[in-house]
Length: 523
Image (tube, rainbow, N blue to C red; front, side, top):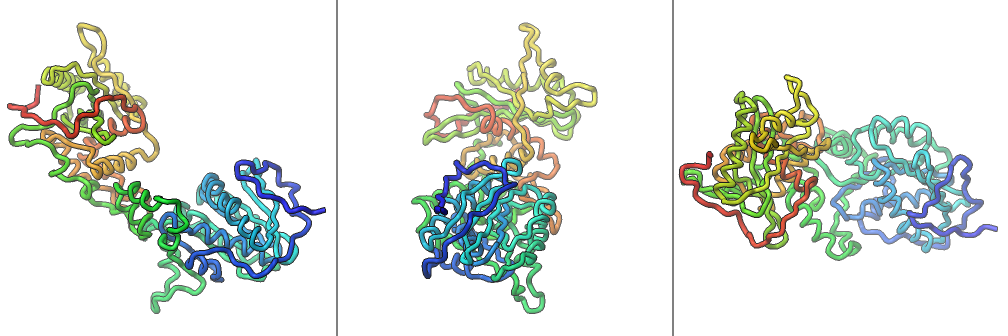
């Protein structure tokens, strides 16, 4: 005797082999006229029969929900339908569209027309998920979730099944056109399908150079008439239609999250397709002399470090392009932390022996202790390359610097480098971090650090070749003399933010403290 099965929470999805999996025995007929609750643009997507349908828009606009209802409709109205849901990662699928299907979409259809379905199952080997959906013909249709992280894997992962419907989630996070060409080519081969066999996708906008934009906004347009090919439909799904469904404060919180990144703000809050500018000054929209530069270079007035706080010394070592920064991170009123860049040593484009550089650094360390009458603790931070890349003489930078800094009286090194954590995208991450700090007015530079000022005004990004998409466009500094002071300044900031932590207690300082250096700050 058949009984209707209940949906299990995603966390309780049954792990089982799919080798012997079969659909349940039968399915009920519809109970009457019913349509799901949809916003106006979601309803247009729901009814659109075009071969290729793209929904794009800002975060929280309900794109995925509209396509998820369309998936269930296809399964219900067709006999033996097979829907492929493609996501760029297992997590994106399991915690995104699949979670919406299990907890929101299928329950609506279950309540609305008595839709029957199986339990969701997970293949322990491939991590693919599937569920059977009862259709109006008394049979069963199937939804199969597949994650494909790289475009080079697409052809092998989709060439077996003959789907009648495809939905790709987060399409602009997919790294190549193969997510369209290879997958769309699989459609049209499944027999017995009455309705349209469609390729559908949703995404947040990126830039006009992205392959998704090229496919749905450029390649499908008739150059003579300016009309889009009738097989292609594109919908902007506006967040304004979905505000009433969002948690209170969600939309307002987005504005705060993307305050420091105007490009992402325009993409994810305004729904614009916009590229990051490349070949342009990286910090020009963030750096302001009137806000971020403290002191007066002509009068030799600059920022001084604050007793009671560690001084971080950032190193970008090199026999020709060594750069050094002295910085402090200080908690202030309102729960924020400011960073002051108060001193620099710059040997860029000059060949300077390490023994002289190390001597200059130690002299500067002694100077600040004497000037502020405080025995500062110094933390020295450098790139991981200082620890794992051999120099031409067969030595490592960290070991050589440590050896040259040994105090003759104590026998201990004055400088012990620590490695800044570094991942595959650490450079654009450091750029974004500095941009954010400038935007939020939590990074200040002494007027007596002219090389740092020059870097913030003249560091430009690599130019992206025409026709290529780079998600970090505008965030990759071009190789120049300015890259070295950027590295030495940003290593301590990145280290403190993501690696070394910050253990400070004072909270009464509201802005950088400046004072006159008289004849200068060189010890």
